[in-house]
Length: 137
Image: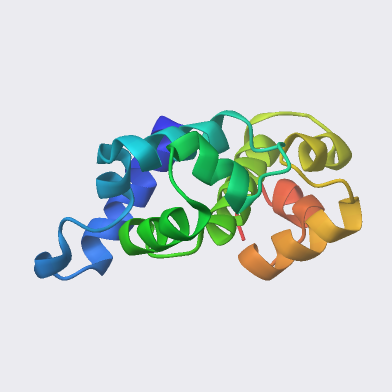
């Protein structure tokens, strides 16, 4: 998780103009409500996350949470969940010998073909190719 925070921080800081320095992933972690939801997403990516449930964790209404999340993180909550799951899967493919099926399951995908399709769309290669290439795309 630390690696992901560093990567997200670097991307956020390099991609945003200085006037937006308070926006982004780090700012979201500084917000108690959003931090609770983000921590739960990171802790259990396999959960069947819904915006309504994340809003409950954050102690906010669904609409308020969604607006707040987009304002701070720069993307909708479910897009963030998908991105986190795929980054986690990439890490598991590199750092473990787990099967693609097990990785898909641990990252919240019930279908290996669905997981493989999303992984390839995001990283340009399928999970098996990614692993065979030693974690390089």
